[in-house]
Length: 456
Ligand code: TYD
Ligand code: MG
Image (cartoon, rainbow, N blue to C red; front, side, top):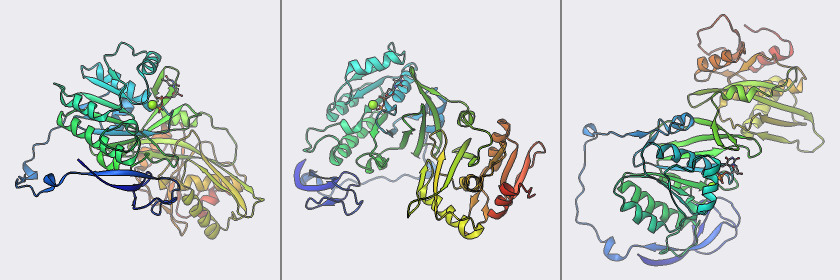
């Protein structure tokens, strides 16, 4: 490699500038631009290659890949049934959320299946990792550990292994290639180290797991480009003050996305939660306005969560809209629809919306439950304790159908909730043990909550 000129690269979005500026013009972040030296191969290697490439027919492709199960059900489901040989997985999350703990538990399980597991930590020393392993009760597992940051040494070692292995890099931001003249964690270093390690892992058909940091806005730190280089991207999230942790797949070349696995962080490590709905509804209070249950779907799994709204007259010129666990712009849209189609005045009200339990909801199907919680809070009317809502709300106040209604209803039934409030257009096979309330327009929902009218 020969040295190329200096460049100024935004550590947040990867935009390149010729001179330093305080604010990135691409992503509008302040103070994210660092000077870095980029490298280019020398002229000989850029000469046009005389080699011809061979094409293959997709029809005849003989694709077979084996999956290595971790035997932790929540993880196996999220990654699509186990790790695929030669695959690269990136797991991101806030500091202290439990990434190293989760991965150590995963490699412990894999190491008991006669797999060679190598755990490289650039952040912690052997004694620190030993303390964690002690805490998890896994000190006898045959995991091989090293505390190094030199990515070229790791890649060399992996390439010389006789058998494929499972390689964990904790974290990719601490890795360093001595040939490159920028500090660990910079975009150039992270990209180059990841590339080097991925090549070594693919060469030996090893399973590579990167741990990555996230920035304050919640995306994977440094380069989003890293997300393009790997096969699977997982986020490990949750509120550090609560003990629940959620593993979410956001990209998966070998399985589904948007599956979640739910764990509880206890003193002896992470434990799977088999019935999350029960857990999310366990602290529910009876007869309080502003609370509605949403029958949601996370990947293939139905989950019931409590949506809480508090609507209060505001003393501020521009009233507050505070949201935890939901999309704030979706709330603004819903408020506008409630105001213009149902004449519910919210413009001088503070609105606080909370998804109980620290879970984040992205499905539009939650609209109906959110609207119900807001109406219930504004009108100080409680919602029946056994009601469950799902349905998307359109701009004209119409209630639109959602996917997998039966799965949601079955989950509600399992937890003894019998009143299902759903879109009229939703085609379902009705079970006579349940009560169904069909909604065509938002005004039907208001009728139901305020006048306790049975609509269907
Ligand atoms: P860690 O895996 O080090 O987080 P990360 O790698 O994401 O930075 O976990 C850190 C937190 O988890 C720490 O605050 C202590 C807590 N913890 C437990 O509560 N129980 C445990 O068994 C372990 C190992 C950690
Ligand atoms: Mg860690």
